[in-house]
Length: 405
Image (cartoon, rainbow, N blue to C red):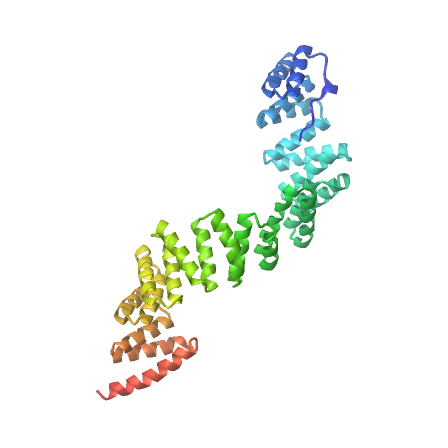
């Protein structure tokens, strides 16, 4: 908010008609007309700092910030230290993201009138914008001493404390700002983001859940709940998010929640719906495959994973998941083909060696199966104890069978 026109500083040497017209136009919010009138007054007397000031004011209302900044600069050349010009120019520079330039002007203004709220507040804003959080903390506190019920100053102090990594203190001031002005209540979401960055997930979720009508906040809370394995709690906010914004990302998050919560019918229906609108989505195909796999629908799962490999032929995950369900579906030749692709991609792990061994074993290819079992045992080294036990048993049996031939 800018200082009003300087009626008291009206210099009579300027043509009174231009000044009068300018003030009348300002009062009627006809800022173009006001700017024209004050420009003519300045042309008549370039040293009339009052006309220059009011020209800058009109330009500010017209959002002609460069012109207003230049005019205020001329005012301060003619009248150094003028409080109103220091304050207005400082605010404009802050709005123009030139906080470093704004700081000394706002410092002068706040020192000139230490009991006025606006210069103290905007000085704090400039300091925070310039990255001087510690100094801005003290400046916001000074502003609050002048106006204790300022939601803007409380919010600013909270943001300063946030930058200083004093999250618990920031929480109290965000809360106070929301109490003073309900429209600023959602600024505490900045604190939730900070909690996330520090892996304080419970605190972040608690804040997000304070905003049931904020789709983005509910979506974020749900994703955090999912990451904590609390899928059932995540479902309701994700359902609301999908209803409000049915994006693929939201649908996939909800499908994941259904999957983790073992609500397979809902998950399957949602993924099928999503695939209708985007059948070439690799992530959707992978999710559909895993959904089918978890329901022991191995053939259907293999179909989805195969489609995924067609979309991203170089995805080791897709080929690996395809190999796994093909083994479970007892389609061993196809499983070996998928395992060959995993190996060619340089992604073969002990589990793949085990799948290869049991596939070859079921195909009665004893020598290659025995070799695969031995390679698995060499590579696994205790990582898969149950499978290692089975591999040792089968290796002994196969070795005896081969020796008989």
